[in-house]
Image (tube, rainbow, N blue to C red; front, top):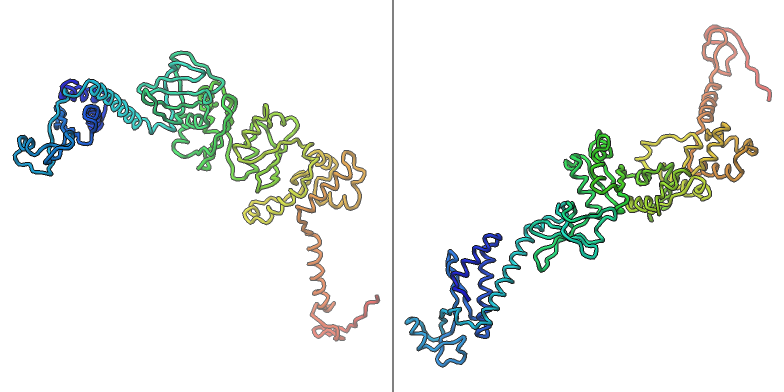
Length: 488
């Protein structure tokens, strides 16, 4: 092994270049000497390594106990021999005896070198880890280095990036030195140092990209509620604005779509739906099925989070999407189990009980009552078959009160385009969800009550003075009169 001071200086210079800490350098050298010491003497328990302040000198010593009769020469020394080194020592004291590393055997030197390399490598990894540990959850840019079994290795400078097959988008293909932007999902220690696990399929990758493109997200004016993704095909992003005058969807899309186009370009043409989040699950589900237009959403079971989205026939395939992709992403975005049916298919379902319960819940909700708009037409009723409603409207029976009156009088029995079952279903929905207020009857009742009060008061036909039934002449003008009993 080379001179200790020279070795210390060489390692110190090396660590300065790689940015090692002084403590890690000292620990590496100490471990190396202790490993060589142990190889030579069988133990390192009594090995003491000390450094000068400027790291120019390193001293290795054996710490031995002073005894009268040595049993273990590695850890013990005779008092007589100790007194030659220090005249102030006594039995039971410990004394440090300098050891020349040149006396270590060759195998010990080899082990010491291995410890140096091992220690430096671990220190290097620790430094890299501390430098890059905060990169998890961030976007990083590197360059395509090589590919092995579909996995891509990315040159990130000090560290290597690892982009596994499962984290890649099927749309993307790379050549050597291609620029790669990716999301850092994890950090791993490898034999060569540190490896950053990258992803371009994670929904958080899209979220990070759009956050960079939209200043309103950075300043918290707009909040991204959730992002779901089928990498390479479609992404849905739910956003909400914290300011009433800021449109969250418009801000994310940008003028003429410039902001969202930048994101789409980064994703190699993947489709992105930016939609408005809403606390009302009906509204949110309707928005989540974009780009399809949803006519109505019915909550089937709120506890189990099951809902029915009703669409026109022309919108069915768009709402479901290729291989069910659109509705599947909507399910994940809303965290609801959404069934999509056409208006004709929904008409075959018995939604009367469901819509009645929903209407009752609506009328019992004080917050909803404040925003409640009176339903006056059949076509506005929840759960009514759209085709039946259209026929009734065409025939002039769209008004709920007129429909009920005509239905009870049998005027609708021969109406073309609707069956008796259709009419009965509409009537059941009305009876289950609509409360009737007979304004005319109430007015007549008030008039009758007023009339009863009026019949108890009588006035003179000549002067208008108030009279009673027991009078025979007016106390004011003196005109005589008599009262005749009404014949029944």
